[in-house]
Image (cartoon, rainbow, N blue to C red; front, side, top):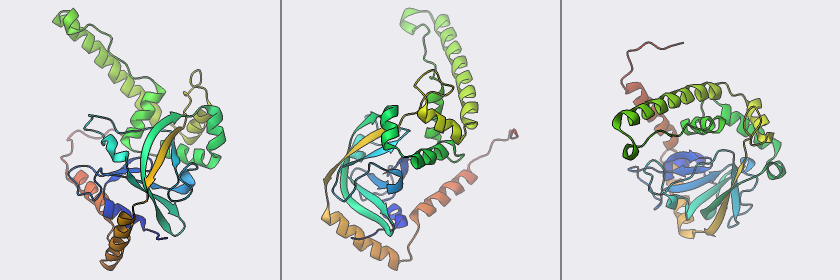
Length: 269
């Protein structure tokens, strides 16, 4: 059994984390994977993950984010089909096979208590309240705390231009208020708030209950050719100095952020 280095996997396969345990390689970045997706699991955070190579399993997450059909802002659904999956062991990451995401089921409170250990709830409470959480996580929490306003005003086919403009104006005002209020609420969330939400009912609590999702994964087989190629490439990677592709991408993004034109308006402290 070969143990892969995490930096090698991210350097060789490319891409970045798009959702918990799932990585996607966006266009036009070079990719060895036809469908540009792969899974990297930390066993301690995935109690229902595959037990052994070739076994089926599930991912568990309180924040669900899935690829969408005909949505250019998300990966294609095919990226979660026949995708390589690696699981963390003490010595490194082990290739378990090619896996396909099947479906996501929302677990009720009883099922969450049965399959989600307390240390995993603590982990996610810290992740969801971290100042470094991804933007999409903050947006998901905003929508969970308070439903986003939907437009209920007149439509162009059923009203004149002034009525439609007035309706759009009211909707924009409601959206701005929602954005402002939920931004403040998510900024002040603490781990204890998330832990309470894990046990809270769906409605009636100070913060609506947060449930975990079970994402079923089917093993489609163990690709010997892919495995041999990865082992061979890691040997070359080590001989060439073990380049840190993930770190290089992070530094490039930081540099691009620094080079972007800054607003002349003073910051509010």
